[in-house]
Length: 336
Image (cartoon, rainbow, N blue to C red; front, side, top):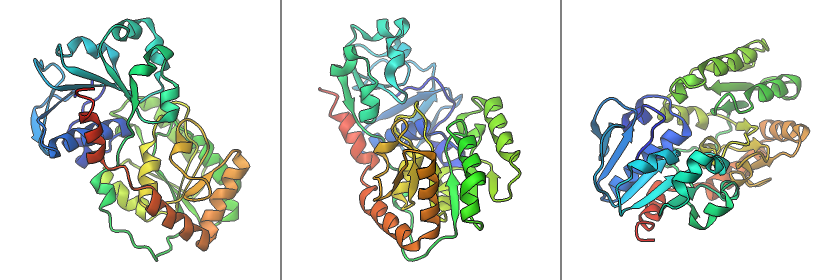
């Protein structure tokens, strides 16, 4: 497995805040190892370690032979693939970028499988690549599925945001101040977000967004530094809801998937892949307008019976994506 964009390894997932793409990479690698396979993962890390059965090595490491070679995001890494083995390009963004000449020439005549994470994602794949593309969703970590969930405790009206601030945080914060908090005066919006989650990428842009949120000067909005996943899940469990606009560039949204698996009702807009993560009026609300978004959020924050119903349904319906099962789907592609 190879990723050229970030400096991370299996320990990063436990000790540091980590983005969804990097989290998925770590957990898939570890699931392959749990299934008995030898796994080597190459990233921008400067150290070589073995962690949870996975050998993490620097990107410069040469791989002479393997049964399955998984490239994370970047078609240019095809030139490093061992010959005569199954190669997979694992996509995490809308696939229109594959039409660029530098990517097209890498892929057009190569024997390769492409993996995307859902129907929205698949629909973005260029027509000339669709027959070589399969859908395999991202999974949920054991850290999510093993959390102790207390079913009969009604949480305080705390809303949590755990995604990239670039994805609608200013919009959400302004709706919060103008509409939601006026109907639920004791509610709070807790934001666990920052550039550290993404290895410092887009640092200035993210800081500007967070400063805009601070500039609203509303005491009900609390900004926190991003934290490791195991600590973040504890915070999510104490929340009443997750509110999230979404982004056209998002193809799975692990943040919403994790919240739903923990029994947290979500209010979202049908932007990007988000309509695939929430079951409307069953596990949360898919709002077509800002007005519906605010109304859905207010209902969940004030109506205990509705909150219980969405919570029960989320725990029943949204916990079936286990990484070990996802890894087995990749293994089946070796001889495909």
